Length: 320
Image 1 (cartoon, one colour):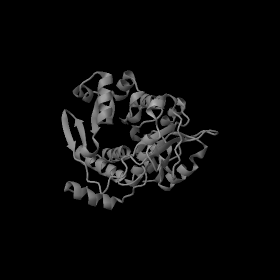
Image 2: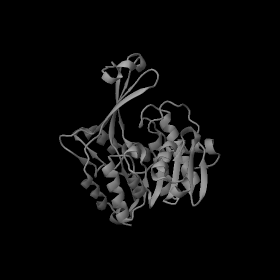
Image 3: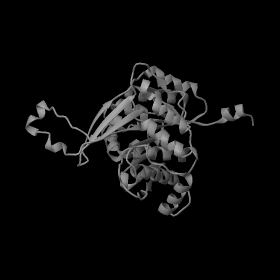
Image 4: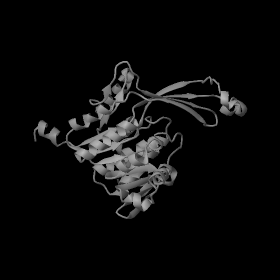
């Protein structure tokens, strides 16, 4: 088969979501000692931190990173600023397709500034990057899309991606995540109806049910596969009126849960695109998530396919 025909037959995975620089600081004290409840209406405090660590993050960035560890090469969609250079260099090293990421001159890529005190309390400020709904039309330039995921991003982008996927009859995973509070009942209904997968954690799922005024059984009918993650308690997959319980894998250490959800989603995409059973797919997803919690930061963990196979057998008693 010629190289041109090979490229034509290649199945693409599209990952959309936020692309963020995480700037993490540690405060060697306790916030509670410096915040006066009786003066909360005129709050004015400053915390001197002892270090600053910049890391790569964002939902699209994290999912793409984990997919690269799983030997998948997704196409990432997103809008960034002039300072994307370092992130782009990292993506290219990991063989992640950055060709369709839009760069806006004179703007900065989204950033999150997170300060953590000695009680593990956090104060976070988030500055979103540029957003342009017209950019979503770039989806139409892609051929042979096997699966897409709409991860948390600017609300208007998420809704537009889904509109286009439906128009083009492209299978997509809907992950409302951190945008669950901004999405209206109408937004949620449109996004969930006809989706390949609806995935959320237990809390987010309850918010969805409350907003739509539905029971879980009714929600199951709106999507092909409903997945509810429950952290250390594993996850639940609902498919064709059946509930599949996915036990959690055992972590070697629990250092930072941030990014575990995105890692789970990468494992999910791997299994779905390999046509594995939902049981096997869910277990892999949970195992990838465990790797994320074992390191500080959302893209600091690493694993080889061989080591993943070993841990899979250790945890679930069967080969991957």
